[in-house]
Length: 327
Image (cartoon, rainbow, N blue to C red; front, side, top):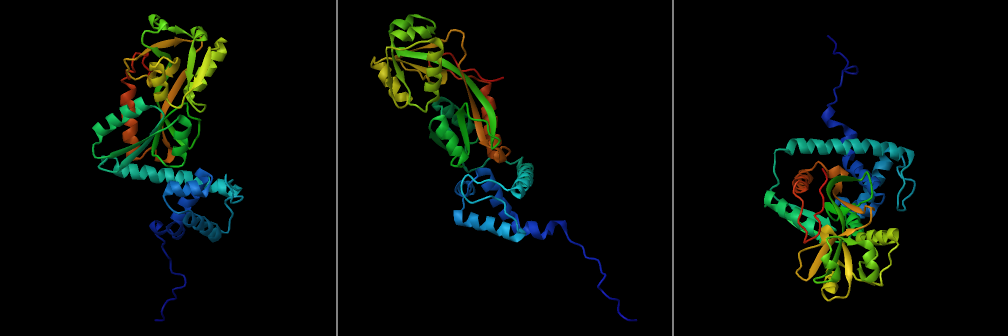
């Protein structure tokens, strides 16, 4: 019999060998990082690759599918209509990939690696690291201290894995876990005339020299708001860089200062008292933050568990009123 033609033979394509996805997963990852960071240099730091490599991967993706994904190549980059549609899909893609990794590794504990933590609170950085190391002794820790603005910048540039930051801006790029709520306290030399009071009325600062933090400080911003709202003007204001310098100045009798309760370590040279702001509430809320796409990673789950434990056990901070932990 004549041989039957094969031209109508059926062909089965395995769903596990999709030619487009197999060839361009890295390109999609490059596009996604650039879209999240709105720039190639920050995306390259995020992925720990060179800028030329990332730019080439983006160009290859656009050339392969004959589409422009960004309006231009100047930061901050703006997505085209096609870019916005693709970004919506890659958000789902990489969220699903993260969920798969977590599901497959959810029974595996941390057995190494390094946690890079940034914080604007020395007290809570120490508490988090102490609890984290007790739970995961084989994982190393690196801590960078800065003000809230600096810490958020490090996190956005992927220089750190997670941040402890006060009143951070809302951004879908980050995941937020409440850590504590802080209130203002007054710090003064031991034996100061105001030490006899249980609470310091803010108008009492009109007779004092006030030692103030640097301009980018959250503490300074809250202090200035409280003074303005109460119509209080100190005798003089001296500016110092950092908490430690201010504490030394207080101990020398140069003046008094305003701290948040979590910034008040025990010091026998200094008395701390809650600040009575006359009916106004000045609360500083602090959070644990990480990149949204990493919130389900084993490292972040471990860190979030530590923060949950700390929320249940408020810190003791010198003689200041304890910071309150969210319910």
